[in-house]
Length: 560
Ligand SMILES: Cc1cc2nc3c(=O)[nH]c(=O)nc-3n(C[C@H](O)[C@H](O)[C@H](O)COP(=O)(O)OP(=O)(O)OC[C@H]3O[C@@H](n4cnc5c(N)ncnc54)[C@H](O)[C@@H]3O)c2cc1C
Image 1 (cartoon, helix red, strand yellow):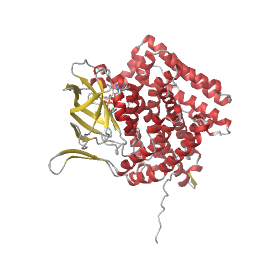
Image 2 (cartoon, protein in one colour):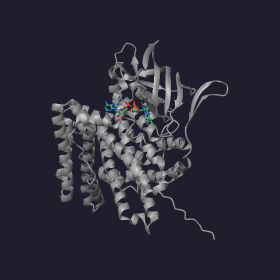
Image 3 (cartoon, protein in one colour):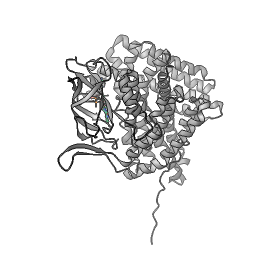
Image 4 (cartoon, helix red, strand yellow):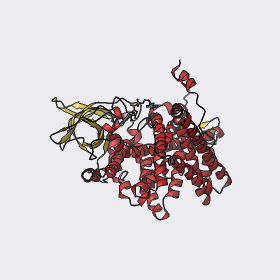
């Protein structure tokens, strides 16, 4: 007797804009009515690509990885990096669809950033972390504008923001050295002025997408003091007109857990010609901050975007997979699991796009003091909060597929591997928690600005259930404020030890408050879903402030 074995139909994706109620609600609320139709049309087009052509290419491209060829057959050093077919296609689409350009064309004024990041969010899901070079490209463009270097703006900005693939450039962000990625002030790269030309000598330890045409990087001009203030910010064109690396050796590509399509190189600068971005050859770490603010926001957007992809695949599977006589989508416990995942995603969307809105205000000269404080505080908070959520949701999503989630050729395990980088690069969770504290110590009103914003949401929440949720978000921020005020007075070590719980409390409480803002808005048009998402989000812990026992912590942490 022959038994035809059962074959499970795989998960499928539709239009990734239409199938993302969290993003749709946010866009509908934030983008002014007159512009909305055109924005939605462009997002729907990107959603179609993301769930269709690009997703199919992504599955086909699964086993391709970048390669480095250091020598040609005749012994010439060439250091050629070949990227995967999907990456080549992604570069073309990114330019044509203006995934960077949209922010700089400013057709929607301060809402251009939200539009651009929504395109990036949809594009990111099917392009194997091509968002990495785009984030750095956007960060470099933003930094050149902020630093107001006319010559470099003239030279590079038209390329970085081009919609023509032939003219489009991507940028790197070469900061991390083996001495430290967080403690970048320890960098060893030296900048020497030789015959009126700055040249860089040193080794960069993580340079993602070393395929970019330019980079912003740090080097210490000879004679400068130690630390971040002794470094200077440099602009560097990676290759000459013949496509040869300009006194740069690619030593190897990193063998990484995830982001395997991204050619992350270790390289040596052997007198690479570079140009100072600022007049004064110092304060490099401070001067590269605008770049980090943009790449950190890309990180938050990519976190929310990765969660959307994982959840959409899990939703599709739940409609197809049968267990114990019913579809998973009819099993109350599976639905409960999906609902918790979706609520985390909705919170991440709200927080990431709120920061995008604030950047848009900044770039259009509409950033008042209050919103400036929110931008300073919420940039690291959004990055660190959503990065942690992205890993948790990717892990949960894999479990939603049972064994299939662990099998490579389903294309699912990569979701978790790629998510794991999100809390690491662009500042780890701890480093960004300390950055949030730094923001507060420099400007005491930063925390009060967040409390004021949440206070506004409390006032606007007319629905009793939403009012209660908004008050609980406000109470969590009050609790965090009380903790930091008391700890600052008594023990700096306690403040540092509690910084992550403090930052995550602010992040999660802000997400809850923003979910309430969305829910209140959506109720007016009869959409109850965002209110249910806010209620669901509040079931998970958001006030993480706990008493700290420094001695006990040390015993447990070090096992002695
Ligand atoms: C795939 C990938 C691509 C990358 N691409 C780039 C790139 O293109 N350009 C670039 O410049 N860098 C890049 N990086 C480097 C990345 O930004 C750094 O790895 C990251 O910033 C952490 O630095 P580190 O590796 O030196 O770790 P460390 O700074 O040594 O951190 C180790 C641990 O110590 C913790 N820690 C550090 N300081 C403190 C503190 N004061 N208090 C408490 N805890 C602390 C950290 O949270 C972390 O858990 C990339 C990294 C990866 C993984």
